[in-house]
Length: 215
Image 1 (cartoon, rainbow, N blue to C red):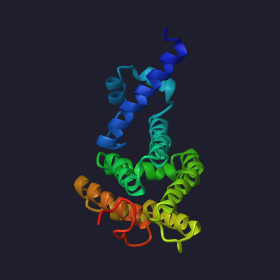
Image 2 (image 1 turned 45 degrees about the vertical axis):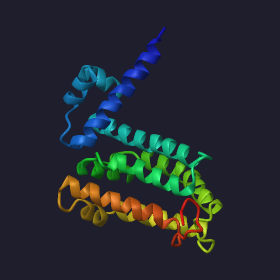
Image 3 (image 1 turned 90 degrees about the vertical axis):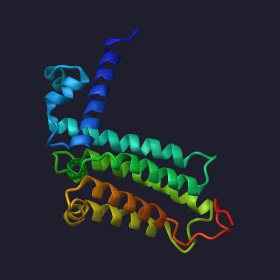
Image 4 (image 1 turned 120 degrees about the vertical axis):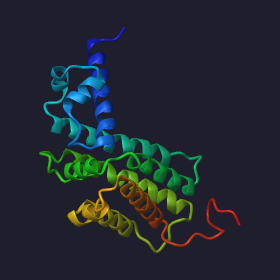
């Protein structure tokens, strides 16, 4: 039998799922709380019992994207049956599944939330808390497979990660990402950057001697 606590947890999760879908599709600004409540089949009064404001709801959606993203990607990296090349492909595919459906306005909201401009630095703390465990695992799998050049230190690779994230999150990076205001252009550009970012970790041109490549 479902308890009252479980029912509330399910209802909160459902509201978050609906909000995430709408924010990704139409952006944060264009999505109204009334629309989220209607699609979640709850009243606005009920919605506000879980989330004190639309801004708080948006923040919780971003926080969920970070925590769930880490969990999903960590499962891929920890899978012993996957080659490193397959891991990289799946990480790219997973990233693109999100960006392919992301409205540019919500991208700006995510960046603002990561930077603490929405009133809390919780998202950045959550990102930083999971960053080293996840990327150290990615690097370790790459080294075991012989796909990361020995001359590249872990320090240099983590700096590469930070530089990439910092620029993409900067006003200049955001402007270049969304300069045309065209969703298709934004999605195509993020897909190319995903490719450059993940394959940049390999550090040296693949040869037919490398894992997962056919002669």
